[in-house]
Image 1 (cartoon, rainbow, N blue to C red):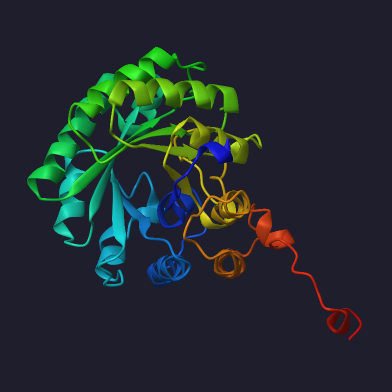
Image 2 (cartoon, rainbow, N blue to C red):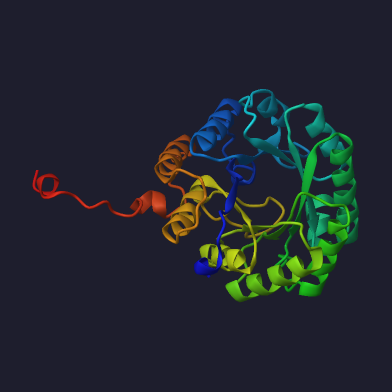
Amino acid sequence: MAELYTGNIEIVEVSPRDGLQNEQVQIATADKIRLIERAIEAGARRIEVTSFVNPRAVPQMADAEEVCAALPQRDDVTYIGLVMNQRGADRALDTGRIDQLGAVCVATDRFAMANQGQTSEGSVEAALAIIETARAAAKSAQATIAASFGCPFEGEVAEDRVVAMASALAAARPAEIALADTIGVANPAHVASLIAKVKEAIGAIPVRAHFHNTRGTGLANVWSAIGAGAVTIDASIGGLGGCPFAPGAAGNVATEDVVYMLERAGIATGLDLPALIATNHWLGELMGKDLPAMVAKSGGFPVPKTQEEEFA
């Protein structure tokens, strides 16, 4: 599929939010800022920096305003704040530092109730309102359809349901629509099929893809998504991530693994792999554990040594 793709792929770095939100060890605000700074130094230009949710539900995100106040001043970086409702949208905009609101709706009722305390249709209505709120504030907004490929409570999710949700969101003209494999159950064939149908339904609005590597299919799904027309991929340094409201959800696809695969296939990402690997090691030390990403363990493609170096 790589030979069919002629452009670059944009990576949205989600480690400061999705990567950390389910971790039990509380990460200091200053360390979150350093993670964001390191992501920028590695070339990230869209970063999901925090979420504006109830701190009792997601304690790791309780410092959302403090994180925003300390964000580096960069005209070339888009800072994304995840919001679930009008209260979250207002908080994000009040910081004056969030460039783009990330709305979330959920493909099934039971997961929507667990995640947001509303039905699936209610989550779509909330996302539409968030998009309009962003527009009124001269900001952009995008929307993610969670559990697009399967639900932890209801199992299979009909493709027609996801396509109908994407069509409803498209009417509000978001910056993009993302399909999220929240619990890591997708397979490449399903990914290709659903993204193709959503693209046909929403026209010129770009498609973003968000995969978890729960069952080891994350990279294959990224490859399939790009072949089907997704132009942006979410990824998390180190492969951290998970959803507090989705039983069994594990880490996101790792930024360094995605970058290695795409760059070796001739698809540019604009990210610096050695810098990502170094950040993986820094983050692992901070959290006191080895992180799931594979490339940080093995290193990038081997560089040939000269005879002098080999026998030195």
